[in-house]
Length: 348
Image (cartoon, rainbow, N blue to C red; front, side, top):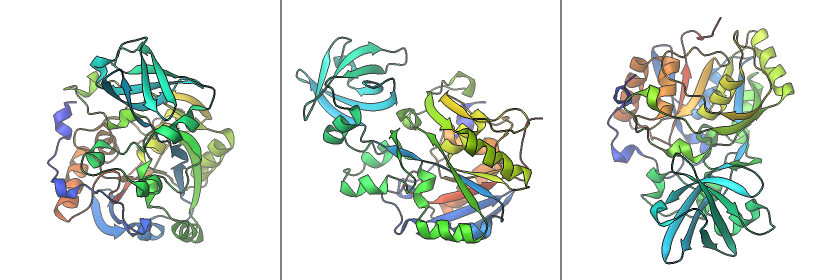
């Protein structure tokens, strides 16, 4: 499909620069088939059914934004994906001033060698020293807020908490699984009281999630790989949810993409550990999930393509037009949507 089919106009004032406080005070647009209802995140227990299961991503955002120097040149690095204990793939700002074999000094005793340049223009950075790279990042790094926020205000201490979900425990993400930012212990208690269960998986979100789609056709876009894991016990419990007639509702596109990567034909979810670069566009037949809670996404983005695949492009265009007209807040710190397709599109 043409990428411009997923374009829309978004006024700047609709971009949220801070999250709702408290977190579960955000608005939520419920799209159930073709029907739209304005609600709030706290209404979620009433919007689901007893026996449903919410699936959260427990990845933890690391301070993966680095600013340094190579000689007199200023070099910025956003870590994207771990290669091994000391090496990370990174997207580099001012990359024309950095060559393979040169070292970038990020301050605070943190330096990295530009070991290799990849075909997509990113670099493999090899960090010096003996301390775990996560310790080095705590010293020298900052939270890598999306450019549509960081370009409008300074990153501050509040972001270290605001840009981390209550489920975060597995270090490795460069971006938060933002749909889960809306959850609080009180909301989880209300969901449990309504008979709605929850599970967690891990997908380390990479910096590729911020990159625009530059291709004119979706078939020409290359997704960056991200590492994820679903253990056998979690897979068994999710399969049991469906066997009992419940629905698997992904919280965030990251959870959805990993679940779909782990699903076999017929919808059975298998244990998974490894990279996924799944790219979901209209025409995709969903196998593992029955609904999605997610924020409002960028025009022409792979995430807007994903929600359009789930609900239909015309439905999502109408939903986003309604959200813009009625003042919903967009993107990472914005409001939520609950997307429930008329019937699950599962492969036979």
